[in-house]
Amino acid sequence: MLARLRDPDGEAIDDALVLWFPGPRSETGEDTVEFHLHGGRAVVAAVVTVLGRLPGFRPAEPGEFTRRAFENGKLDLTGVEGLADLIGAETEAQRRQAFRQLRGFLGERAEEWRTRLIAAHALVEAIIDFPDEGDVPHDLVAPALAIARELHEEIGVLLADQRRGERLREGPAVAIAGPVNVGKSSILNRLAGRPAAIVSPHAGTTRDVIEVSLDLGGYPVTILDTAGIRDSDDPVEQEGMRRARERASQADLTLWVVDATDPDPAPPPGDDREQSPKTWVVLNKTDIAQRDRNDYPDWLHGHKYLAISAKTGESFDKLLTMLEEFLVDTFSTSESVLITRERHRHLLAGCHEALERAFGEPCGREDIIAEELRLAARDLGRLTGRVDVEEVLDVIFRDFCIGK
Image (cartoon, rainbow, N blue to C red; front, side, top):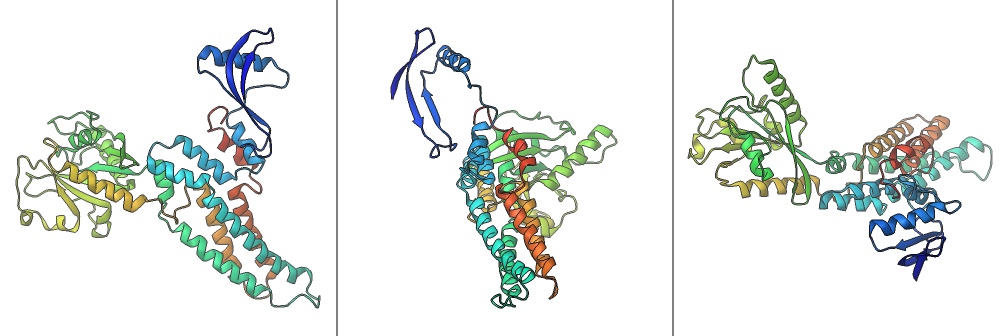
């Protein structure tokens, strides 16, 4: 309703829209009221000051509204994490993934698994607790283990996702590597659309890893410009090259840049054809060197490669298209990608291992089987926040903005 807000002395503060949300159907599950004020700082400050003087009123702690929603069963823990990721999403792909978590895609699946596990556990416990009862079938372990095998397979499929969810949440990395003076920094600057790195004709200009964050086709990407690879006695440059190799090995994709004018360009260090999908070769400086494909060394043909000019921008549109297609193919948020945090993976892996131990037990060890099923169900309960999660709640909610 439209209401005139006044201070305790009766002086009008603002004409505001006041909305009342009675629990338990509110966002937090509790009685909630919202004031839609005119947005001036003085108006907001005056209303907050008056509210702060009323008995029982205080400012919300960071994440307190979301924590109350969790405690009142409005969100499970994976939904809470999805909301945090949605608030922090910087690209369209991150937003889609976070929204899937907020809607409960992983949490609902985990609860369905946990329900099946509890049923399997109950079957084994029946044999243990009532071995002599006539109305309790003796062959209850087999159907319980059949459930365990099904869940083991389903969770295994989820775990075999190459960590795409976590990598997308954190942002995939593309490393630009190669020998000195091949134009790596020029490529970084053209990708970034600004002079992010120093460009110089002198070898060894880039001494450390330079990072630039980009949005490519809705995907968050960190472009890494690394120190040029060459023989050097300079300890600072050696450290830069060591870091370059380390970051390139950890990147989701490496652009190995070589000089198109070099008659015998160097291959990537430890060149392995099995790793070629992770390494593309970029032939730079085509504005001053035109070569036939057959003129390139044999090692080049084991990689995807592209000839460009960082100076003129020749074929840069094609490079960007290839990068976007790579991101879509690698990080598309399909139905199978539900794990977005290391916490999810750790608990699902624990559940997976407990299930494997359960159906690996010999006959007559119902007590051990029951314990492994209990541990598996416990890990699923921790995933959604149903059991034993007090120690992680403060860590999760403290990352929220005030009042969220």
